[in-house]
Length: 67
Image 1 (cartoon, helix red, strand yellow):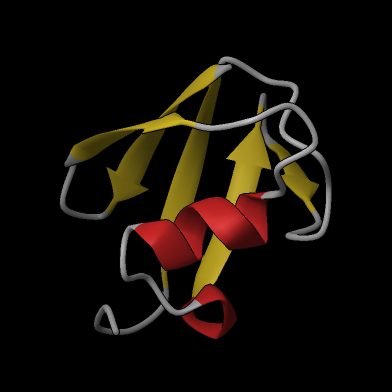
Image 2: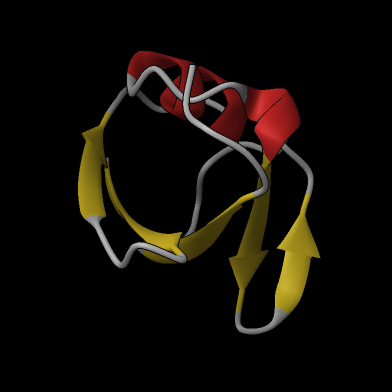
């Protein structure tokens, strides 16, 4: 399962290759991004971090520095 993460505001792109059942929180942590400092959106709709990844591409709004 692949999901493309576009980081806002810097425009960076990360590709997460995980296992079925992985959550957005697990993906963010794998990139070294603090889940408490990120908001995830798909088609303008906010997604909870404990949601299983099903979308192919999401936007991640970083509210502070990584880590």
